[in-house]
Length: 404
Image (cartoon, rainbow, N blue to C red; front, side, top):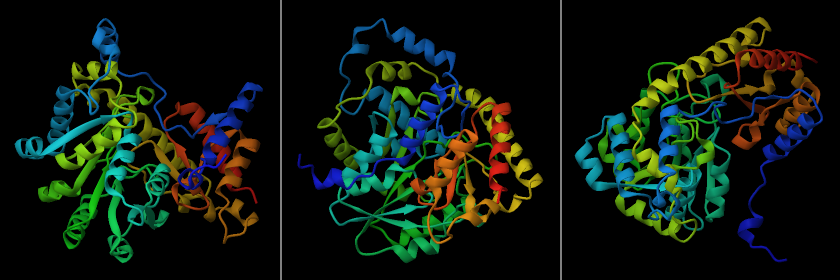
């Protein structure tokens, strides 16, 4: 069968192979510590579950929604963004629109589809979320990567972004709080970025803010457009209920941005999946979004405790030079290249998958290879599992890292 060049150019996720192996090992009765999960191991708020349950009684919950989502919910979510970011509500709501999609990934897919022509370049800040480059390539674009490192807590330099700009640069994706680094960019960085954007008035920004509510060290995440509201005219804000409501399986994401661009994204969605989940939308219309902050309080405390435990164990094992302060989202990146274990490997090649495979086979621990995120010889671990198994898993990882 002759497949399209478009699909031939897409990569399979090596993470899926590791997860399948982990499931097989679990079925065999082996104890597996899953540090790869990008979701909370808890149910959503009872109040939200009750709203979903209530909507089960209505016919409209089982029927099509408008392609871009129910208008009342779109207005509600637009207002929640403007309130949370301290934006001028009247201007924001009159000149901008919102589209609901089947998860934030579809929102990003739609946004890039509405922007990118073959040959256009899109800047990614490494570490980046695994799907960004594949979606860019699917639409015929070329990812251009700006690197960062553990010494700077994986925060990229603005000057490095400037160096990679070209006449073909169409957009840049900024993911703060960052998956996989588990940090959010400072207000000083955002101020520098806002000034940089003024140098390039045609550059579009996709601001992936899915983890914006999940920070466990102050100050909270801030954004470039809060410093200059005019930048909203070329910004698409991506959000979802996946993380903040512990509802990854309900598949509801959304994008807020200039009305013309949101309308173009709706054209793509209308010819692909059509409208998102009606039941979940209707439940969300009646749900008090202010409850999210209370719900996330214990979650953020738990992640902060696991992050502190990680720091202490790294310090005790003389691996403090491999540690940086994570501040938000669910994650931490382990830099293998600066550990005793790495002496077994060639330093000029990426061994992320091989090391992750060893961790699974020998220690029963699943991690996500850093190569998926544009960071060679590293891995992402999640900080969300229960305290005791988390500490057991980290102890095993440390023994592995210190083994020559």
